[in-house]
Amino acid sequence: MPPTVYSILGMKRLLLVSYVFPPAPSPGALRPGYLARYLPQFGWDVTTLTTGDENPTFPARLLRATPQLEQNIRGGIVGRSSSPHSPLRRLMRAAKETIYFPDSTAGWMPPAISAGLNALASEPYDAIMSTALPASAHVIAWILAKKTGLPWIADYRDPWNGNAYLRRGPVRRMLERWLERGMLHRANAVTTISEAIASQLAAFHKRRDVHVIPNAYDPSDWEGVPEISPARFDLCFTGSMYGGTRNPDLLFAALAQLRSAGEPAGNAARVHFYGPNSEQVIERASHYGLTLIVRHHGTVPRAAAMRAQRSCAGLLIFLNMDPATGSEMGSKYLEYLGAHRPILAFGPPNSVMRDFLSRTGVGWFAGEVDQAAQAVRDAYDRFTSGAFEVRAEPGSVSTSYELARRFTEILDGVSAPGSFRSIA
Image (cartoon, rainbow, N blue to C red; front, side):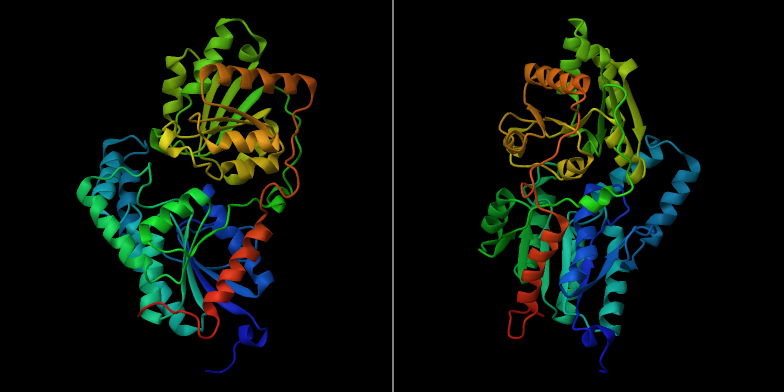
């Protein structure tokens, strides 16, 4: 094969498999976006196999894989009903959760595998990486690695088996456990975002080479987003409520308590929700008598969400209240750090988020109603004093550049001559 521009420049090539990618308004899009953006600075040119039809704000080589049949069905349903709660839409969601395997995004697997094989056959690549969830990304990468013999890195942003947010019956859980174990023994390396998930993966897959590369934030994401001084005591949430597995009850109970007592923090507060799966907040607001101060904006472009963050006096994080999820932090807090606004986080008392906020001094954590009320008071005091801007200490959180550097070490290792290769 004649030399390519990549070999002439000394660049290696990576096929990155990720269901979401910027500018999708999803926290899961950030990690693959940072890899595609910064790995070239370390000698790795990235082609991303993904869904969606929008382009990011940075140069990126993309392979699109659209589940055509599913798109046609969805188009027909949307044509009949614009409501996300219509019987037809609920039926489609239920069918996907029940029939699709390994998850509801399985419709993109056939076109993604086809596009991936074509790309790998047409040009030389040095490695494949998948980042999940959804687990379909790992299945696609596993098949591509089997067909080509290329080394494969499986990156877990969230656990698959043992995930508290995935509701599965016993037969489905057994099949998924069998599939995950069967696939992952072929991976050249496994990476994840935290020590807690790494321990879980190491025990499940009986392997010691699970690398922890924490999620990161990119200060450049905020270039062009104006610094807006909040004019009111607005509290803002931008993200998903994950179909009700996360809820605002702790905050709403605290606000109801403050307003009942006539406290200024409760009377001044206004709460704004941006993102999917948050329709139920209006119902919960009504339950606590807060309908007039809670607004649901729906899903908006990420740029609009970031402007909203900058214009608010406090940023909200809602974690699953199940103590079994105490080791999770999600990734939303990383984006919030760039907004330079105080964070109010609500979750189980044992949450690792409590220690992070205490250590960095960028906000408050509440696991009970009284703590939530005090967090609102503290945020209000900062707002009225004009000290609404907060910044994490340099080095306390990883940056996107550091994320790419650490992945480069693993990529260089698995692609080196004589290194372990996937079992064909």
